Amino acid sequence: MQVSSLPSQVRNWFQMQGTARAVQLAPGVWTALQDGATVEDAVNTDVLDGFCSSIKAFERVCRGGRMHTGACW
Picture 1: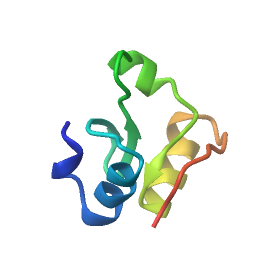
Picture 2: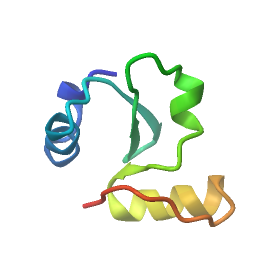
Picture 3: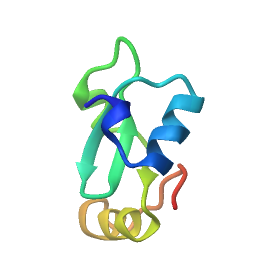
């Protein structure tokens, strides 16, 4: 998805990094889709950005409780 369509906090964060595209992993959880990367590459990243409670729930339910780096609001 285009970063321009994301909520303002996440959109601004990605735009400051020069990221134009992102993958939504769950409601409120995104990761950057870098040039040359596949969606699968992005899904398997260790960086999650989005809303703090959504990221924590995603980590607990989908990643076995493993914590990831990234920014949250």
